[in-house]
Amino acid sequence: MTLYLKNALHIDWKTLNFKEAHIAVSTLKEDSLKLIEQLPPADELAKQDTILDCRGKLVTRAFGCGHHHIYSTLARGMPAPLKTPRNFVEKLEYVWWHIDKNLDLEMIQASALASALFCAKNGVTFVVDHHASPFSVKGSLATIRDAFDAVGISHLLCYEISDRDGETSTLEGLAETDEYLSGGNQGLVGLHASFTVGDNTLGKAVELATKHNSGIHIHVAEDQADQKQCLETHQKRVIERLSASGALKLPKTILGHCIHLDKTEQNLLKDSNAWVVENVESNLNNNVGLANYGLYGDRIMLGTDGMHSDMLRSAKAAFFVGQTTEGIDFPGIYQRFRNVHAYLESNGFKGDSDNNLVVLDYDPPTEITADNFLGHFLFGLDSRHVESVISNGKLIVKEGELQTMDEAEILTFAREMGTKLWEKLKRK
Picture 1: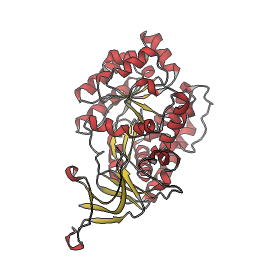
Picture 2: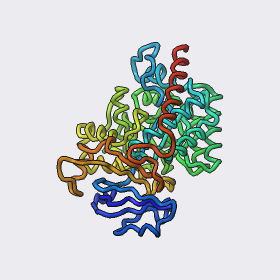
Picture 3: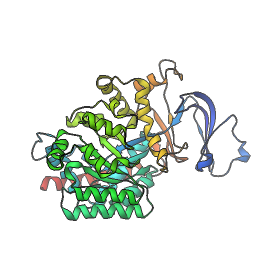
């Protein structure tokens, strides 16, 4: 099956070169994308071939999210916590841990379907997710996988293992991870954060990641409380502890946030194989501080931390904040926006090949060229310009409408599960 994008203005996502051409997109990796001068005659088209007219539209590589929390999808508009949080740890206890303790598999499915829908409509075709549901662990990763597959979004999943909910929950998290990775699914070994993970659990997680040729996905020094507990309990700072565990040697390891790092930790990070994900809007929302990510090396990518599924929005926020914290420029923020592809490709993960594309209906008031594209990227393009989306060679969004599932059914199901969750939250 071949999808032909007719009369497109193709933008090479690496070089930003512009070329007017027809584009042949295939589900086959070896011939996933070709720029062609002429379309095949009608009598040579296969029955399954499709032509999409892209005259006046921009076509470029689709987007990826380096750190998501799909389990937070049903939180939008939820009841206020019974007690107002005074700091970051209390926000976790009264809000996010209150939510994840009350999730069941049906709610997780609704969260995953709705999140995948939002990703698709925002041009995001690959998601690295970090999931938590301590009293509904078994089968949670497969539930998310199946929902994302149904919508057409590729994924790299993990379960957020933690000691905060007792030994049974910890063991279930380790077992869920082992079973998921043993089943041939691509994924990571998730941990919540250093301050909720003991040495035994950290050691088992690194062993599991090594066993499956995977990596660790963990929140790092998001708040000073993480560093305080690590120093008091382990006599080390968080990055030092992770380095001693062997987690930083694994090239698939992802460290979320990394806000409160000292010079020693910054150097350890730069000399390691790990990748860092910045989630600026979440940091602002939680009032935990901001970081100069320019001190951490080149392996920096962008995420949403579950705030939303819009990576164009995340890039803008990271740029606006980064001008103050590190003096970041246009090429620098675009590189971070696209670094998720480098992470996935360098580690051999599937689902993020050249046949992931976004068609942008962007009619700017000024000329757009290779020379000024980054200005349009930051100050013009946004998710409302995403018209059609191709994931692994398949058209999953056509002219703003999801093609793989019924959008109304997804949102009706999500609202039903949201109400169910909120009723549970009120009772506890």
